[in-house]
Length: 90
Image (spheres, rainbow, N blue to C red):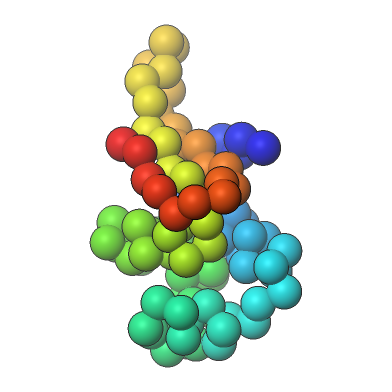
């Protein structure tokens, strides 16, 4: 499934929904990437504060593929989709 991310809120929904679909709590995800549970809460509620480095870690931990492509109508978006392997393509 491909999800088009156009806003920071879209990004937080992808992170939250991906985490929940795996049955993980915020604490579970936090432990996997070496942060505190409150950090995951902040990423899900204040996604504009997520650094690129942390976004990459989140995608890797959640087995998400992050792709940034040119749009023919000059839209800026990123798409995320679950994958079997941890990998990222820019």
